[in-house]
Length: 307
Length: 316
Image (cartoon, rainbow over all chains, first blue to last red):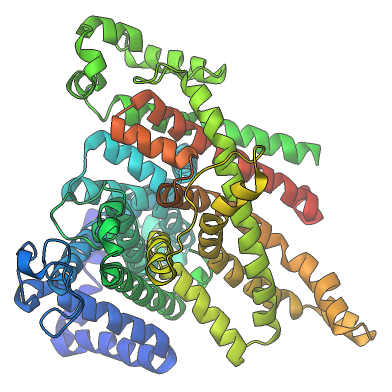
């Protein structure tokens, strides 16, 4: 039985290996073309997000000034060629700070959304595949967890463990991971009842094997869409926490903290300070949201309308 | 209907248990030692010795006993005392709860008056310019952070016209007009963020309902279009919207925290933030618990009204 199992395990691999790299890349290319053709708004959103991602990755090169380079002779300067977004009360270049802010935002977004997806997949798989009492208890726990407003839960936990990038990634990852597990669980429950899962069970495959080789590949569309929507949610939550002074500690220039009440005092003198970080947040979240919606429509029509 | 209500109430018990456990664990286990924090952060605590504080908080007992004591207190309305003001946490919360409630109700009112007519319009004139504008607006509102809108409303009118929204809280029963003048701006901002989702939902369900046979029947027998839409379609179309409003309760409360901070509305959110900045753990856990329980009961109320609105649910 074990030999049969081994034989069944890597079976799907050879054709892929034979086809080589170009064939593997083609589905992605074809998907991108379909996205542009069928969902132009979604493709636009994806492009906007990629632009911010690019800015984030190369922020250190692109930023014309240091994020904390103060210049007291150029305080609260309105936008000009030298400073496209103006300068703040310490003479720091807002454009540079917004770029570094994009970097921080992206780092937190990818780490936390990645962690959230892993947590969702782990809980969703266990709860959905094994079912029974484990499922019932887990689901009541998820119910209770989702009862608490995101922001209230975040504020409480951060107040206890203190602000900082690792803490925020951990808390956001857990928060959205546990909440998202419900969506993964739903998908797992459907796949569990498919013929191929039963076939694998009947030849004696063990649950880890089935979960890895049969369930996981078939819930991938759901997982991808989940990750995409989580990126947007994480960016907004991190900004809200930083706005309240509970996010990434200063002087790190996050978009949220640039808009915080400490900064507001100077906005009355330099209203441009209020524009750039908020516009960036809106654009990037709008981009990822419409991109996520398009992905959902293309990859998994069942999830349409659920958020 | 009775069986439905009873089933729904029974389902609430495990969820309430887990919710209380989440509050308890996050406040007692994660922080390592609350006493350390108290000794480190609070001047009040320095005069007292470690054992006395531990005993007063019940921390010298095993965790499960602590939980039973804490939850037992919570069930009779005793959530401990604020570390700073020495007032009961329940009293602090009861003073703030109606204010957040008022803000929430106003926001809900704004959200529904904006979202439902636009949602209906969008569904009736699907794929027209108006529909696209409405949908783009809703997508945009999902992306705009409310704290940024709040900041803009604070800053720009003041820069341009030397006017800024009033920030002084007046109790409703003292002067309703000034109270509403203060609450109006945060309520509109909170309502707008809620309206985005509600609008999408209204549009989707109305589109579904308008395709039903009984709508064709209503049109075929010669009813006027407003009659068909308002009497026949809307009544069924709004049922899922009611559930959605229940699901949005956490979002409403979360958004209230931020807007209360910007517009200095002394509600639950501001209480939480004040408690966080002072590390007043009994208050934090009290607010945390009450918010969670509050959302659970809002959801319960929505589910029960759902059973009342939609007879099909009762029989399931």
